[in-house]
Length: 306
Image (cartoon, rainbow, N blue to C red; front, side):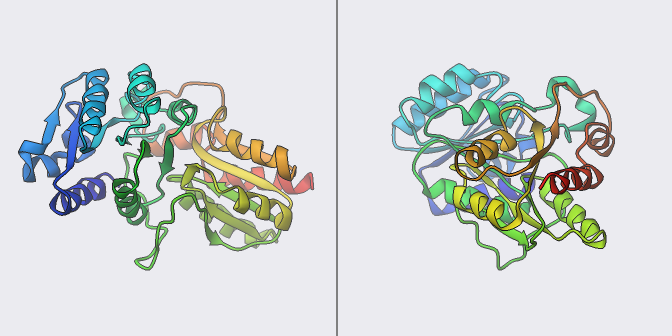
């Protein structure tokens, strides 16, 4: 995802001279280095100063530019929430915040670099569009949509390589869920790297006689309420899967929709009320309940309550 993001920025830079890119001394990791190499006069390394980076991006947007500002998800919005709120969200400026290293799959960098609250924070800000992509194909298209859509965007990418879940015919549609698999007994709604895990779980559940629908809810704000309500009505049970705290993320948003329109049994596959330790990504995902087996157990529990 990160490499695709960096290379997509270069393509956009060639197409639109008003696109500028900012980074916080992490361009080798966020892959904005590709843009820096191609357009050094339109790239701004703000150093380890995310508050300043966000404020500069806001100023560039107010001057008619389309700024993409990147760093790790733990630093934006974590380190500069007030600047994002005051300088981007409240005036509704055309700033694109694209963060990498979301979730706990950052791995050995440890607790200080695990971003597990970012979606809760950024979704609390009125006017922001929030996207969590599932693979490189979706990443490229989401970045392009952000570049051509006016207003504040937050796009969250993960650190590790993930399998492709979409093919070359896929077309990202802002604000719309994607049905990755049809099913009638329950629906798994997932984001980010958990989409491929959800598909694995659905395949295993099929052998147990449970037919699961899988939705990739890559746009979590604005969320696709119609797809959620339809899934609840047609399958009668919902399981959410996200690499984020259980509170305030995908599960919380979907629960609000269902509480208003179509209450059904729900289970939440997410990080419970804790910070993760340091470890290899696969070890952490297993320890904190973000595996196919965890999704399968959640589906069994939800179906049992139908």
